[in-house]
Length: 141
Length: 141
Image 1 (tube, each protein chain N blue to C red):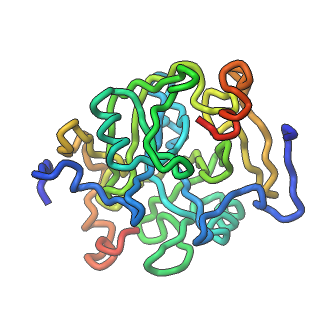
Image 2: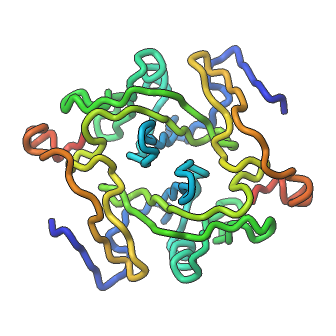
Image 3: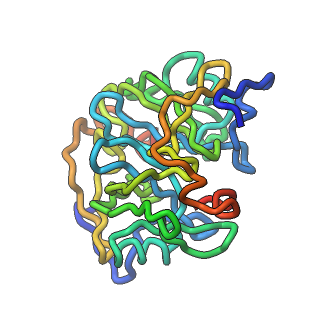
């Protein structure tokens, strides 16, 4: 294995799922908090690299979407890393507003205890109803 | 939705994949680096909570395994968070040695550029051959 690998076909080093997707962890470039995990298809990854703003794949809509399209809470990409198996992406990004459609900075706003109980351990940074319509809130941005 | 949810069946608030798995992101409790992502089944999550050491599910072995069993590079859990959809875990842990079977502290040791080229951007913290046997290195711990 060489230290640097280049391929004629871009992203051929990545291992996509059978559905053609790859999980992308988004980490706050400012504070280091993990903000969310979502899935990218090839089109979403290409759009992310082209625009410098994160795009993901929506299973329900069966298409790529731009994070922050409705809310303005975009993620400006600083870097993208790939794990040892080539099947997970780590995107460092600068988050405008909150990453979570429920109004939190990070989607990981609940802590799990040993009994399986969840407790909210963060404060909202925006009110979802002021950002999304009722329908959009449910469909999750 | 209440702020605190408890269920008679532990982890019923989690959304497992059709295979009964959930992705678990492991973040370094010390520096905040994202170390790896792997999958847990219910048994791995229970063992993780019981022992305070991360356990994951191996698709190839079809069983749970303890991270660091061979290498000693265990991960001591500080907290486990759950995302808004209940289908991703974020484990903050103290990492002994390196998380990556290729000898790096983090599995995300390669950066992706816009052409799809990967460049190694980290230094190894251990030599895999000194920690794993050849067979074990290939099967990945």
